[in-house]
Amino acid sequence: MTSEPLAPVLAAVRAAGLNAVSLDLGGVSDKAAFMERCARALSLPDWFGRNWDALADCLTDLAGVPGSPGRLLVVTGWQEYAEAAPRDWIVAQEVFTDAVEYARERGAVLEIVLALGTRT
Image 1: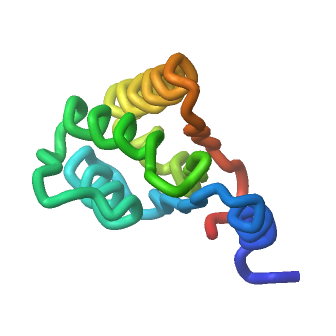
Image 2 (image 1 turned 45 degrees about the vertical axis):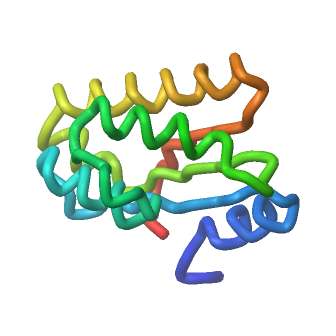
């Protein structure tokens, strides 16, 4: 058994030509840390303002990554953040949902999966 349970899934997604990224929120307990983790994991641009609107803008931009048919974002370790900052976690989920819907409306592929269990 691998120490990264989602590694085979991410490898299969990448082999299919999609851009697959893991966002590990383990140890995150506030919005600032959440935004910083997003900035690093998603390689967000310098202009990323570390607020909900900026995250929404960046996620919708990611849906149209040139040369890629789409993107899969797997969020792990989110339970700790959800418990520590429940209101912010609700907003994060709304941002994720809106970004996925925005991509679908434009024929782009952006899927965001909240993984249960062990972090990658």
